[in-house]
Amino acid sequence: MKTLKKIPEFMNETEEFEFWANNDSTEFLNLKEAKKLHFKNLKPSTKSISIRLPESLLERIKIIANKNDVPYQSLIKIYLSERVKEETVK
Image (cartoon, rainbow, N blue to C red):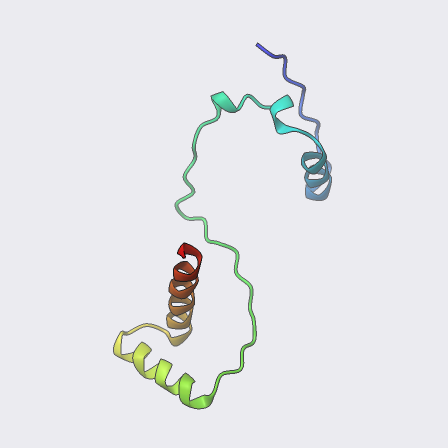
């Protein structure tokens, strides 16, 4: 069995990021002993953007969202997600 190196103490996230960007994790961790974790309540990072839409398109989206009892911005995210999934499967 290979002797693993000790993971150093980090002063901050930037220092830790730099360390892992420049070092091979297999020298510090035995990945065969790793356990799979599920973070049920972890929400993906989001970023606010501005997008200009024709007013008529936005109104139609709002009508559809209202019929489905969904906020219109959530509906837009659903539509975008579905389309991106379609495009990446091709």
